[in-house]
Image (cartoon, rainbow, N blue to C red; front, top):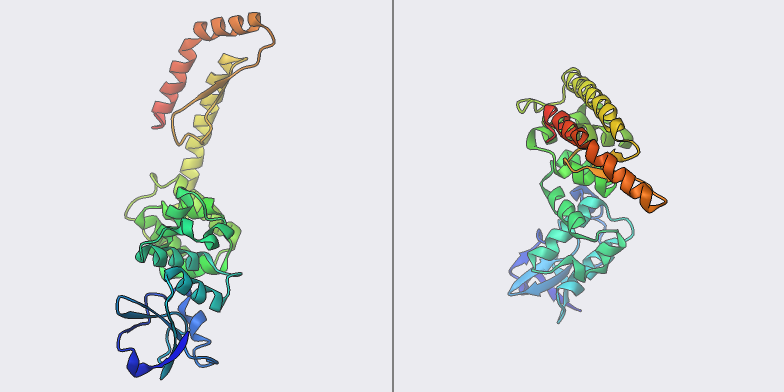
Length: 280
């Protein structure tokens, strides 16, 4: 690392490496600078690694180092212990911008970001509104909730956005709203794009009554298959059924198979009910 002057660096990019969120978090330290900002060069472009809003007369220049060294410097400068979920999303985009996979970075593993689904969710956080991102940045949500959130259609994201501004919800209430919106995304009118408590409660109530009716019918029909248990393991997101039973002898097995054959109409009736409620 060496000290260079501003006139030696005519092409400084202060935006690309700015992974800090929200930006005002970085701004609070912009006037309290102990050392000059640091730069990393690639293909003639000098990327500023810290104090992103600050122009200086002198800079520390990281010589002969690669992208991971530059990224480590930037992240270590601000500290790696308390990165929020939006900053992790920004760092993902930064790595991919330069053609790298996050599997090469231990940082993401330390924050529990492993597997294609979590990476996809992290990537899709980038497109959320600033208000939602600011809320997520100061709260703690599981990837399960974040995954549902990023899969909401555009009008429901807008509803969630206005819900935040109107209600200032707790983490628990926000999670419940995300789950309800996701579960009932097909029932909510597409032209509803702002938070309307009364209108949404009508939809939620209608859905609950329909769901109760469906589950009641399913319970009655499935009970005809005893001792065979019939389950759907994903809350009827799919129409896949799991049939299970217990035996303690070959005779039990044969007896149950015969009963299942005799009651095969039960399965047909179950799928008829699922079709009735648009689940098949």
